[in-house]
Length: 188
Image (cartoon, rainbow, N blue to C red; front, side, top):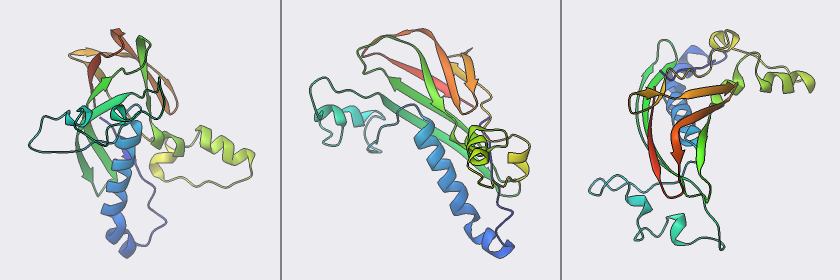
């Protein structure tokens, strides 16, 4: 389960109801667009295969117009299923992610950024704010240390070994990912 906990106690009740859905959806979109390793803009065509953005016919695909010789970036395709509980301010979701290694290197691990963790009590952002004499307030979830929770990260039916450095999750792949190959991960 991927969970987001939002401090919205500073917003008036009337304003909160009006802005609540917009805020949660924006947070959800920001998280999934930024946490999916080296995200790439995607073109969606409901009549084409899901990975058509990597096509030579796509004028927006970076691989069709590299800025210089030897340039590369990773490609990520993802499908997201999510629910928003407006009473608890929690977003739960499941993501299926296809990661292509376009680098010249063989990868044994990949990183995922858990950006919502930055706003949790005890996090690096709080330490920075304290050092700079900036007051930071926390909601009930943030005070409890709850930002994002990754229940499982899998390839097939096998959980990946992970290491968490507060807002960066390092996931060890089951086998090396060679240049040009891809792997499918499921995150809940």
